[in-house]
View 1 (cartoon, one colour):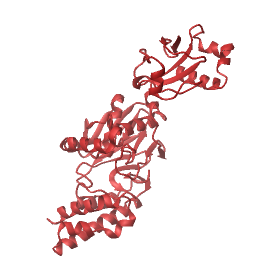
View 2 (tube, rainbow, N blue to C red):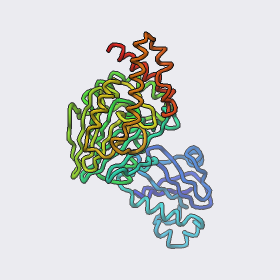
View 3 (cartoon, rainbow, N blue to C red):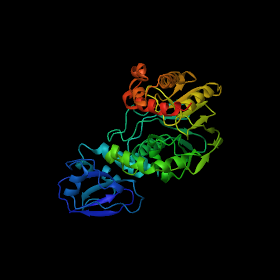
Length: 403
C-alpha cells in the first residue's frame, strides 16, 4: 500500500497501487487526473485511473488549482525537502531536477493558476501595453475551436480591458491565460465590438473575473434575436470544442460615446451607425493612438456584410478623417496595421461590390445572377472568398435595389 501527500495542503490519501519505486503525478483537480508519467507510471487520465483506485481532490483549494501529489512508500518521510537531502533522493535517479521544479511550482502557485490549465494564446504587443492575438483565416471547426478572429487586451495602472474574446469558451480561457501571463491586475472590462459569435463566445471564460461587460446599445437585442440559432449552429460546427460556451451580453451599454479609465490610461468607446452590423463599437486607446475596429476592418480575410454596405462605405470615409489614430487593429487580419492605409483594400472591395450590384440592378438582372458574377475580379485578393462573396452580394443587392 502506498500513500499520497498533497504538497499544497499536506492531506494524505491512500492508493491501492503496488510499485517498486516512487512516482509523481500532476493533475488538475477540477478535471480529474492529468498525470505526468515518471518512473513507470503510464501517462493519461484513463490509464492512471485504472492503475489507481481513484484520485481524491484537494478540498483545501478551489477547483482548477494545480495539485502536486507525490506517491511514496508508507514508511517514508512526507517531508519532501528532506527527501531531496537524504538517501531517498536516490530513488529518483533521473527525475530529481523535475521533482525540485514540481515542488517549487506547487509551493508558489498564485491564485491566478487556473489560467495555466490551458495553453495561452499567442499575442503580440503592438504598442506599449496593448496586446493582440491574431485569429486564423478559417471558418469554425472543432480543430480551431472558433479561434478565427482577432482579440486583444489593454493594460492600465489599475486594471485590464479586454477587446473581444474569441469564438468559444475554450478560446476565451486561452486569452485569459495570455493576460495572466503578463499581469495580475483585475480585468475591469470585457468589451465586445459587435454581435458575431467569433467575437463574443469567449465571454464565458471571463465570468469568474467579474468584469463589466461592455457593448453597443443595440447589442443585447441583436444577441437575443439570434441566440438559439447562434448556439445551435456553432455547437454543431465546433463539436466538443464548444463545451462551456454561452452567450454573455453586455451590462454597460454604449449609445454614442463612453470613456473608460484603466488608471493612467483612458479608452474612448464609440457606437457606430449600421455598417458591418447595426451594433458596431470601436475602441481607441488614447495613450498609444491604437484603434480597435472589430469587423469594421478586414484585411486578407474577405469582409463579411451583415448590416449596410452604404453605411459601411460612408463610415470608412468618416473614419479616414480621424487624425488621432496611428495604428488600427482589425477584426480579421494582421495584429495591427498603419492608419489610414489599413482601410484601402476593404474600401476597394466594398466599392466594387456596390458599383457592380447597382449596374446589375439597372440591367434588370436578378439577385441570383448578381451573386454568380459580381466581385469575381477580387477573388485572388481575399482568403475565404468562396465562403462569403456571394453572401455579400446578396445582402448588397437586397439593400441597393430599393435605392
